[in-house]
Length: 387
Image (cartoon, rainbow, N blue to C red; front, side, top):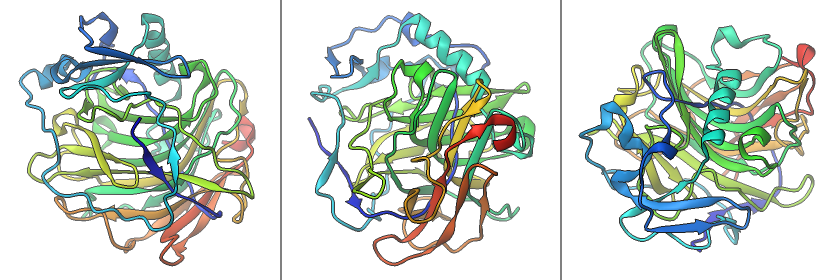
């Protein structure tokens, strides 16, 4: 098993959003389970998940009509430059007992029923976090967002978020999010990464790594989680999307972090996902998937998001909404210029966004270890009052 680093230490602030689903950009479900693949190897995790090691060009991404003649880019042309500080003597449990062979990538096996459920969840729970999502019962987020400026676009965002395991029941979702998004309502594009707890999608309460992309087409947001539909091109043979994360941070105890970033490569326009303390490239979203993320992103967000169809919203983060012991982000980074690594301090205005039940704040530079950090979270409650 390959170890992926997390950071362990005290506590502190942070906040914001998440979520997506499972439609193709053309507005219909592309069912990876229906495509004939010949796995070179199948890896079963301790949680019962199965990952098929499939050839690079056999992964779901290449079912997309826009990627029929796409040539895989194995690594970004720029070098990753780690931004985190602090100890790294603890490891995230990557779940997989073995890496896939060279020339293959791990794709989580899903049944037709799981894919159908993911489609339904996408329709119910995805929000683009624009003005239309405010005060909607059953949905809430708290965190930071870049203030919109017509002349400013961003080419990357990242940070370290504490790994938490909020209590979630069927019909609910709770997640952390790093989001790159923007565009007019009829061309809205988005990429999000983070961790989430989603009982209905996974049949368990594990905190899992997720990615999601979306694009509004014909008035409908289309896209999907991870590799559940054509879109994301996986290149790394060892890091499996959907994987459970651990250890879990302990309130008033040790804190564990996952480090994620997304950055656009200037020469290709591809948006690369990087994971772990060494910022290892996992794969990318081709720019051809998007209408409004072709040349940078108009807006960035970091924080926590919850959704529910039960009338009660679940906990966000670790359930605390105070500065000292809440879930948090640290070492926030953003990028103005494509083709360079994510680094440096925050030099733009970030607005705090929160609700009655979920708080966020203390967004400022706190020194070398914490960097630019903030807290987020809350214990939830009645959906009408908390949204």
